[in-house]
Amino acid sequence: MPGIQTTIDPVLLGDERIGSVATITIDNPDRRNAMTAAMYQAMPDACAVALAESDLRVVVLRGAGDLAFSAGSDITEFEDRRMGGEAEGYDRAEHAAWEAIESIPVPVIAAIRGSCRGGGVAIALHADLRIAADDATFSVPPANLGLSYPPEATRRLVAAVGPSQAKRLLFTAEAIDASRAERIGLVDEIVPAADHTDHVAAMVDTIAHRAPLTHRASKRVVDAVIAHGTAADIPLSELAPEAAEAAAACSSSDDFREGVRSFAEKRPPRFRGA
Image 1 (cartoon, helix red, strand yellow):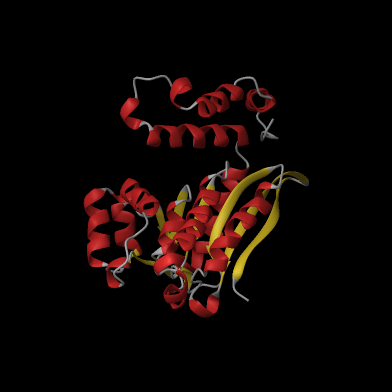
Image 2: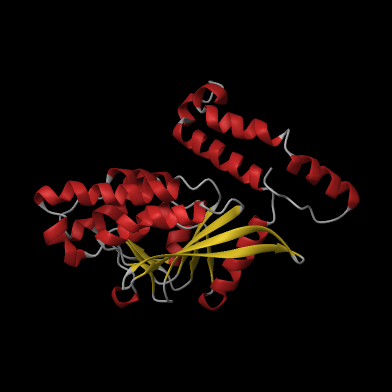
């Protein structure tokens, strides 16, 4: 049955568990992982399962199988669920799914194989990093349907690729390959499909063994810069108090002391997120 699945794996330093990684899988392979309304509604709960891990270090978003990250929203539901009076509820479910991903305080990686379309692009845009296999393709096809791409997803698209490239994708509804997606900034990196799983796992491992408080602070600060970039002369503490507090907390943390000690002792640090 189509759904959103969350699995948890340990992060180990030697034999010691120091954290965990959550994988959230868009699981509808018979329809190239198209998102049903029920799947959008399930995404916040899937994210909550990940956040229930007190030592969470990284979240990976992926599609089931190798053929698609997500072919977007399931068009077969649109007549009943996305037209007329039903549209507002559908839009709320979409936005709640994106907000759940956006609110994850640790690094989120979208691991993209195969088709990534429409709503799938929106999901990927709410991750912090997008790593694509060389078999990935992308499109934003509302112009094929007479539909407007949601404003929040459009904002993310413009932030990633710039206004003219965003307009081209929206105006033409064309599919682009991974190489072009990387050139315009839609994805951060391309790797051969055969190496994609291992490469993502290596990236996850690298991030998971770095200082988690630093990651949380960095994510908050970068997001605050994006949101308030035109007000660079105003102190961060006024623009985004939570980001400023997260950044300040790092300097008095046990992890900071551990990082300094481990450097002096020439050993791997044991970061515990405290």
